Length: 389
Image (cartoon, rainbow, N blue to C red):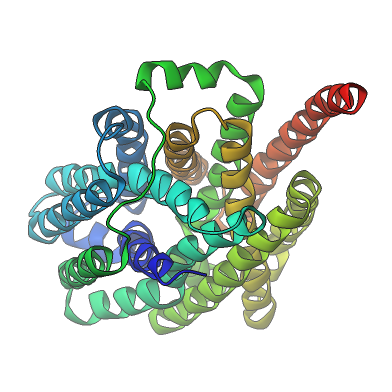
């Protein structure tokens, strides 16, 4: 794998840390700003909606710009957004700062995925994408637990200042390690948007939305779940998040290999096992060791889906991969917002934290049905290719 992929992974580490660390700091942020935990959870939705809004907007604004300059500029925007997060004195201003930070997310991962895939042979594309996303998963192994502990020690604002430092390191890595000239297909952006009319492209993005909603309907509230149901201390929650991050990292790399092997069967099989694990979590969350084991397996399965779905979108939208890849990041984060909101609604209406994984079960089952439909729609196209041969 080219060394230049490392620069994308470092940037992904910074972006992943700022996106996910808010989960570990949720009680502290809520207490400091005088809002409820469900209201603080909407900071996750606000960030996710910022990604959704930023995806098409920045896809249009950066369509004709050089890839390296675009990625460097997006990281600059990320740094500015985190500075604003650290300085925000109120809930409303923090929400606005999170949205500013989120604007770079979709375009960076969308463009970065295509750049990563173009830097390696065709049979290693999903593994290259997974390597870039390894930065995102390592953020959960290192960035989120460290950021949570740092925030509990020095205050949650200190965590965002630390993320600013990560962003500066990522900016330097992009400048030094990315090739100066990265090939890109020239096309008209409005013409590329027509790819959304393809039912398989649209369906792949809807599956991304639902899979992400399944994860975040539970993960957004994992800190209070572990405290109230498993009876973990604040320090133990940090350790549990570290274990979950290990699972995410392993799952991401596993998903890359599965996608390069057999994409759709791997997607369907992963969703089946995920449904079983989430259902089991309603029982295992009451005991320490079973809860930790379930968290680990859940993490593996949840992020094995990421490279599978990202490559599925790039493959089905071969006429406009940059745009589709960017919009799929918006789809993932639309799912984040929907999932965090569904979780908040469930808690507000009396669903116990212990039973929150059942919301994830329902959403994962929906994703499984859509994946089976997409696989069924593939068959006529494959049969046509065989007949033509």
